[in-house]
Image (cartoon, rainbow, N blue to C red; front, side, top):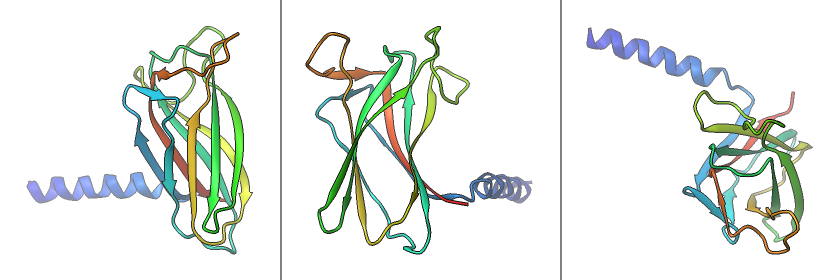
Length: 159
């Protein structure tokens, strides 16, 4: 009976992982229950095939404590030579009625946010992500962004 259950579990695991054939890199880092404005989340990317093109995504896990309908992110890609390209991005995080966008059946939602398409890599790269949310009419950034629990970065093969 134990061998049969192990075989079924192995089959289910294979099916789950084989459904995601485009994935090249997919990693999350926890920021606790709130993302501090000075906290920079860094991902060290693997060396990728320089003859292929890739699509890049920022992934966020958030919960019902997230108080805003959008999010501003500063994403920097750093090459091994130190050259850094910085983008300031805005994403919609909630529907007009205030319910969070994203996938998930509980109050935790996962959002896959499109970042760049058709990217070629040469060498090793680092990606740095920080939040840049501000309250309306205020200059200083939100010190602790409640409701964001995990930050992820994903690379997929382009078809």
